[in-house]
Amino acid sequence: MSNQSQRITVPAFRAMKQAGRKISVLTAYDFPTARLLDEAGIEGILVGDSMSMVVQGHSTTLPVTLDEMIYHAEMVGRAVQQALVIVDMPFPTTHLGHHQAIAAAGRILKETRCQAVKLEGGAAQAEVIAALTAAGIPVMAHVGLRPQNVHQMGGYRVQRDEQQLLTDAQAAEQAGAFSIVLECVPAAIAAKITSALAIPTIGIGAGPDCDGQVLVVHDLLGLTSGYVPKFVRPYADLKGLVHQAVSQFRDDVRQGTFPSVDETFR
Image (cartoon, rainbow, N blue to C red; front, side, top):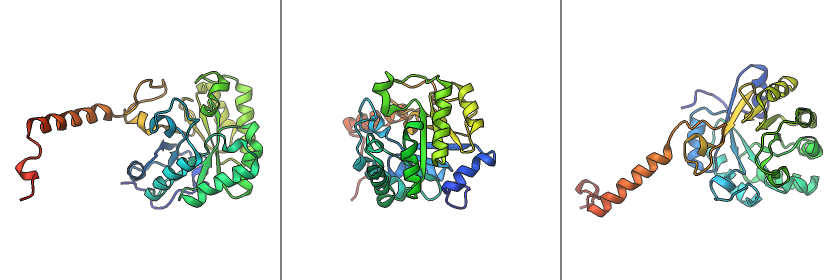
């Protein structure tokens, strides 16, 4: 169980940087997973649009809808007692004007128990970030590789334009973002950005000098099918365990050894 005594708020999350406390963040898309992560003491839980790929089976994050994000975020929000819960703004909700962005983010906060939203972008999205924060909606920004822009970027590539990355990160901070995800950025550049900002950086494929780290929980647990990114460290092989358990169940049913006498009502 977690040893934390109270809910992590947006200001508390941001203050971890000044306290020199590294921040752990994982994705979750359902009640039981979110409950397990929260009980383990994870500081941030992201209801990521990555569910489009790891849960729904799509090849990109683009297909997932706002209604689907809210459906899953509501489950996660009910499970979590202590972690800060952030919900991804799905494509293209942040590109339809300030009012529609506020309406979409407002639905997320009103219809779930989550506390913040995440949107992809830096300088180009600064006005949207400012509009959301002015409406009382906490925003985590996301610069570097932006999966919603995969077609424009030409694939999932490491982002190496140091000046653009720094400009994006600083613009997001100035617009009011409380934290920034840095994805697929060379470690040296991520370290410079982290030093330049007063708000926490959360890295994914951005080296060890970020203020925190985030992974897709399916990757961490070894449940990923197919390609596994370089930056992933599988901490378990649940895919192997599940395969073993299901195969044993199949064999027991075929052999008539399940259910046993002890597992049968009389």
